[in-house]
Length: 497
Ligand code: PHE
Image (spheres, rainbow, N blue to C red):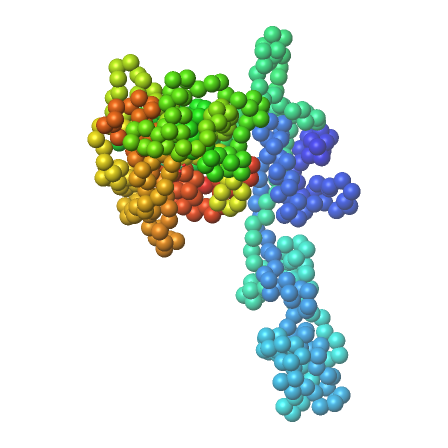
C-alpha cells in the first residue's frame, strides 16, 4: 500500500532506498528492507499493478573479524590502550601484554602501533609514546557498517580488504513505475470464472489472477493400506495360489450351536464361560438350529456314536441357542462343512479359507486384544492323512517365507490329532507358536452327514501376530484399535513394501 500511495502521488519511484516506512524517520536503506519491498513489488507485478526494474550495486560489509574490531577497537588501539605512558613506571612486558589483550591482538597490534609511532620500547618492555590516538581503522569499519562504503576511497578499502576485515557483496534496490492495471487499492483478483459472471457479463471487466505454472502443486492426499490389510492380502494370495476359495464369514454374531456344539466342544467346556466368550444380551437367544442336525449333534455329545462314547454329560438346549460373538472362524468352517454334506449333488472335495475377525473376552495387554483376526484354512477330501496336513502347512508357510517348522501334539475338542505349529524366529532367537491345526473328529463330521471316508483338516492362526513380527511392532494397540495413528499408517514402511 505504501508503494502504491507513493506511485499515486509521484507516478514513479526512481530508487526504493528513498522509501520511508510509516513510523520511521529515515529511509529504509538496509538490504533487509529492500528485500521486504521486493516481496511486495513481486506480488503487485504479478497483477500488473506496477512494473519494476532491479538495480544492483557492489557494497562492502564487515567480515566476522571486522565486526569484532568495529565493536572492540582495532588490535593496535587495544595494545596502545593497555600500555603505560612513557616515563610513568617501567612499561609492560610482552608476556603481560599478551595476557591483557590476547595473543592475536598482541601480535598484530604491536607491529601496527609501532609503525604509527603510538608505542615504543623501554628496555625490554613496551610503553605508549603519545597520550591520545585516533583509531582510524575502527572508524572506517563503523562507516562501512553504516553506509556500505568508505568516503576515503578505494585505497583505504583495498587495505581493509587485504586485512580481511571487509567483504564485498551485492546490494539490490529497485525502480518502480505504474503498471497497466495501476490502482491505489489492492483489489483481490478473481481466481474462478463463475456462472454468475457469465450471466451478468461481469467477466468482461473482472480482473483475473494469472495462472502460475511454476507453482508447486499441493501434495495429493493418497490413501494408504493398513499393515494388517497388506498381510491379509498376502495370505489371501497364498491361499488363492494353492487353489483355495474364500468362504463366507459375514456373521460376527453366531449361536452356541454353531460356534461350539457342532464342533463337539462340550457344553461344560471352560471356553464357553462368560470370562472367555462375549454373550449377546439383546436378543439373548438365536433362532432354533436345524432340527434334525441339532438332534444328531446332541446325541453324539450325550451318548456318542460313530465309534465314540460321547461326553455323557447333561445337555442344555439353552446353551445351544445362546447368542455370542464368534470366538473363532471355525464356526464358519463348520457351517461350510455342513453345507457340503447336504448339498444337492453330494459331497465334493474342497479347499476353502477365511480371514476375518473373532472376539474373545481377554485381558487386554501389549499382545492381546479382545478382538483380532483369524486366518483359517480347511481341506476336505477322501482319505486325507496327517502327512497331508503337515505337507500343506509346510507349503503354506514356506510361501510366507517361513521354512523351518516344528509340530507339537496339542488338544482341540474338534480335532484329533491336533498339532501346534512352531517356527524359529531368528530375531527373537527362539521357537514361537504360529498356529494351531488338526484333523476334524468323526464326532463333528459324521453328524453333519459327510461320508465316513471323507477326512477334513484345518488350521488357524492370527493375522496380527505375523504382522507384528513382520513389521517389528511390539504393541498390538499401535496396530489395531483407537490408538492407531492414521499418520503412522500412511508413513509406515508396510505401505510401500
Ligand atoms: N479354531 C482354532 C483356534 O482358534 C484353530 C483351528 C482351526 C484348529 C481349524 C484346528 C482346525 O485356535
